[in-house]
Length: 190
Image (cartoon, rainbow, N blue to C red; front, side):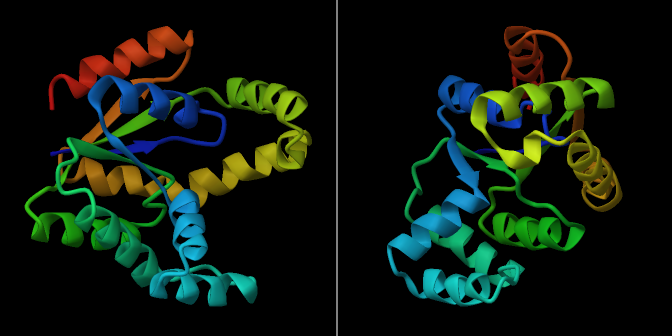
């Protein structure tokens, strides 16, 4: 099973590239936001637990999210692999995901980290803000803060996967097709 973590700062193109990788390699897409919404909509026990946290404005616990991923794995045993987008975000989440997948003998094969210069990230997000109407993509100071938070809190995950020889830094500058080709070259080696 080809399990990949797609990683990078806001504006790196994760969503665009995830769609390409899903189609090219026949992978399931796991976005924790989508997963949470579908479990809540289905009114599952995990969905109800998640909703209780969300209704209080709190983060859903890692245990609940991992439970949702386990449920997804159980219902998709024939999947060729999974691309994790937006998860894990912390080392604790990465450790929990590793435990889950290693116990099922389907470990993460690699973290694909899209590397993009800050100026390009800001430019991309401002353009996205104009077309999407997302308020968090329309204010340069908010964008720069999101990028700083990513570097402070989320980028340590790269060290976690690097220690396992599973970190693959991919140049995220250039056309969508050029970046996709670089990602495919990496995935072909896994």
